[in-house]
Image: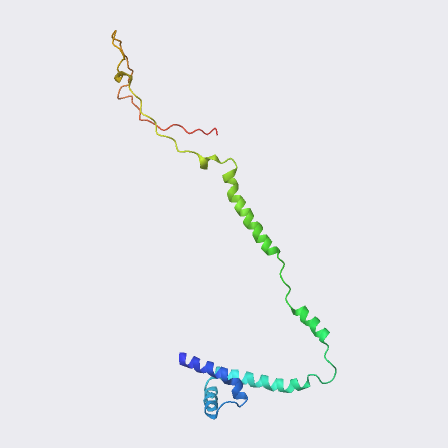
Length: 165
């Protein structure tokens, strides 16, 4: 399969020299034998042969008779040339990208403080007043501490967030 592809490629490259009879007799026989057995190469050979015949019949007629009208030819060529596309499409893509970036940045800059809020600190443990010793001992003071019973004790909670900002 690959070998046949390479042979076909070689024959296609040799078609001009084959039609001009510029090949050596040995190479010419090989190319002719392949053209006889390969339908795709035969079609390429027939197209090339017919094109050469048409050109040989029409090219000698160029320049005979009236001189060519180059201005008319150039105007016809200009009408067939593709027109350059306006740069508005590039401007539109740039505008769309700018609007997209703005839509993503505006919530960060206009009053959305939830993104910059600090993490609340942990509560500090409370100290018991009964463990403190008085500076001087003159009279016995009665130190009363109010402690809640273990049944009524509640676990510590985080402070409530302040939404007034």
